[in-house]
Amino acid sequence: MTDLLYEKIAANAPLALVAMKRLFRHGLTEDFESHTHHVLMQVLLLFRSHDFQEGIQSFLERREPRFGGH
Image (cartoon, rainbow, N blue to C red; front, side, top):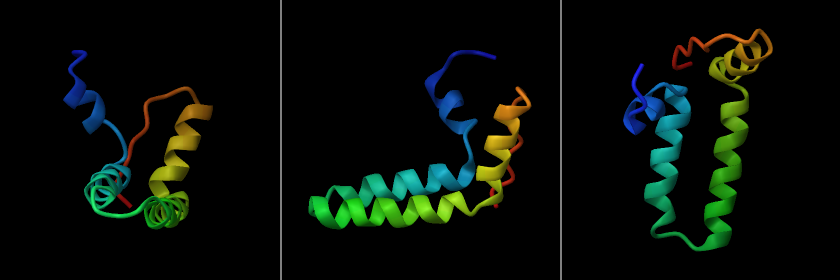
């Protein structure tokens, strides 16, 4: 595998990537307090995802994660 930045980013959990892009976009127009609230709400949703559980499990098992986007 090459060390290209886009490949490293794309290897992450799809739900987290979508959330990150959305939060970056909204962060350009929101005040700090509103934005931090939206970030917290998004993180809480991501913690409930299967991809979050897969990330934890793969780390504990010392293997590459298999994210499914749910």
